[in-house]
Structure formats: structure tokens, C-alpha cells
Image (cartoon, rainbow, N blue to C red; front, side, top):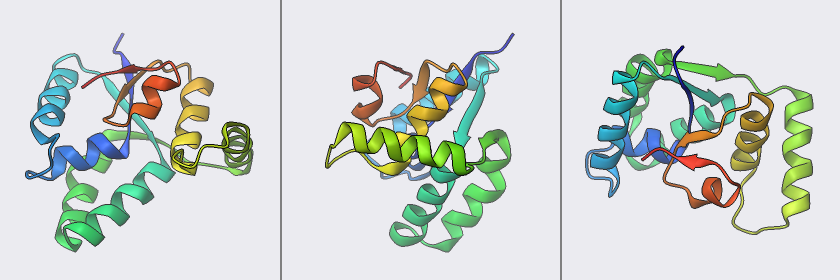
Length: 134
């Protein structure tokens, strides 16, 4: 059975952007996960965040490249009202200025799907007890 690893914006962005400080690490991690036949799981919120960052920082060609080359490889959990409210509850509990709704939603989905590994460069995941794959 293949491992299942959550994919965060920080790693998806770094993988696509050659001049990102974490690009080489992201590319190596993605290659290792592909070799393991790992299933990459993410949320619709991570997709929105990734598309927005790519459009603003790199341009729409990068958005189209992500949409055609990477997004189809991801198992996407589409955020519904229940997951959204659970993420807002977690955000309210944490009261952290640096924790985003996207990250809180990711934590909720990871726990719901029993995922303990994450492809990310965001230390919030490690602080939440998840294992970074980078």
C-alpha cells in the first residue's frame, strides 16, 4: 500500500519555482515520494492559496503549469461547511497571529484522514506534531 502524504502550499510553490530557496529540497522530496508511489493529498484551500501565490509572484503561466502538470496528481479534499467550521474553531483555539485558516484547515483534514506526514516547509505542521517530509 502506498503512503499518503499531505502536500502544503509551501512545498508545492517551492517545487514549481526554480529560484525559491526550498526548490531543490522540494524537487528531491517530490522525487522521493514519486519513487515510493506516495499519494499526495491536499485541500481545495491549499490549491486556492497556491494559485494565488503563483499568480501574484510569478504570473499566470505558472498557474496554468501548476493546473495542468501538478494539480491532477493530487488527491484533493474539497472543503465543506463542516471542515471549514472545524478549521475556524481550531484557529480560534490557537489564537496565533501566524497560523492561517489554510493551515488550520490542513491540520483538521490531516487528522480527519489520519495523515501524519506532510510535504511542507512551514514549521506550523511540525509544531502540530506532524512529520515533515522535506
